[in-house]
Length: 223
Ligand code: DC
Image (cartoon, rainbow, N blue to C red; front, side):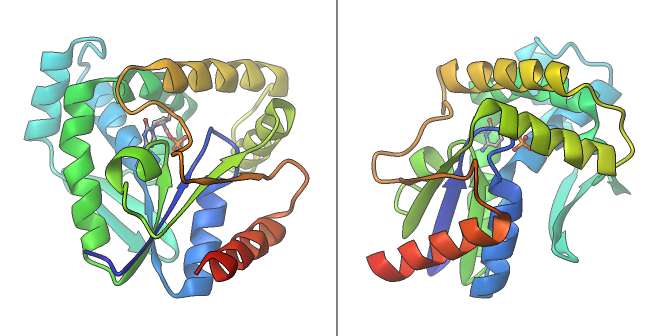
């Protein structure tokens, strides 16, 4: 078990991934991108043309696929049956399907122990996702829940996608993000929700540097 566990949860575009990475770098910690795991399973299922609404088929895929998650060059790399899919899991088609896949309880049951084992390899870990403070690491040392308004979140995602060569319509993106948030927040198992003991940070008008400084200050204050 890691000696220091910090969780960062929140909706898409709230700044979790960038914050987790920079915060981890500042603290000499590792980071865990759990969204990448749900994306990897979704991609593997899409590649095998599995019916994404069929739980039994999905379970079969998860159980028969070799997933490998590693931190390299400050990012979480994803290998599926030995091939690198680190970029491909960010594809908009994967994004469109991942929320439905992530709502399956039996799938979450399989991924949670993998997330805990990943964290267990390190002394210090910053884990980000939707349920890290509520379900995966309920005894984390520090829990944060990031928020930001919808327009700002859509803008951030649009920038990220454009930088990676995708054409985007920001309005459409905002509608998709809101749909995904609704799905993630209303599902029965491990919904996107702030843990009762999480500190909420609104990142709407903050730079990444400011968010990390604020979190470091809060850690110091609450230590
Ligand atoms: O953070 P992200 O956009 O890469 O997450 C992809 C999807 O995975 C998101 O729609 C919700 C789901 N997810 C989840 O249900 N639980 C997590 N711990 C992380 C992500």
